[in-house]
Length: 284
Image 1 (cartoon, rainbow, N blue to C red):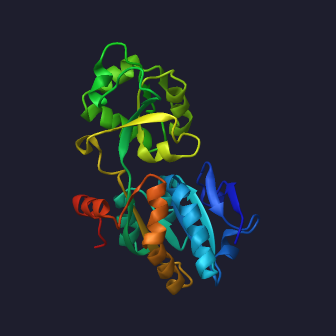
Image 2: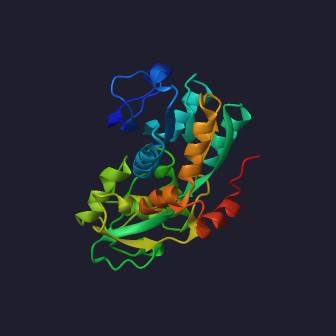
């Protein structure tokens, strides 16, 4: 099994990426990774906590190595759509990206992978007594907002605040305005802020798990675009059978378990199937 490394990726495609996650041989080029018995897999960086252990288990069972990169899906997608980059399996966020890649003939087919959901978080003990997202409008509440986080995270959180009718209060009374969700959560843990809107998956990261209170946000407030994740085989797959076998594993009970543990809703669960129908996530 190959080593896990964090690296910048796709400089040759002119894409600046941060905090990429890879299961790859350090120092090997992109071209040398596309070989028989190995598989190049890219995904939205938010999926890394599920993809890395899933890839390790697939390698253990199958014997094939996985060269994995998790990074900003928009940048990866742009590099595939217009930058001349190549990969063999891609798991993007936002259904439209998979649809564009399929329309260009670069993605052969795709299928639902998992779904995300949004929650509000408070410090342990919920000292401000937050019961729901509407409580952000109450006097004295100190919100933490992340409007400048990389898309769709920052934009999605602001849309949720707006749809819930609390955006004006959140902006006016914000005690911090972040550009990265992971660096803003500590403002809630420390008690600097009373409440923030984040993806549930963030609360399951090792550095945050058990350190905040979690309160659901009604689904009616969600913007649809960032909710679904898909996975598909790309036209550059050198071993189509291996790529199909990999996706079959990722969608199996064993593979989907890693997404559940990372705070996602697995596509193959009953709830996942409901969301698949709701958001129309199907290959056409």
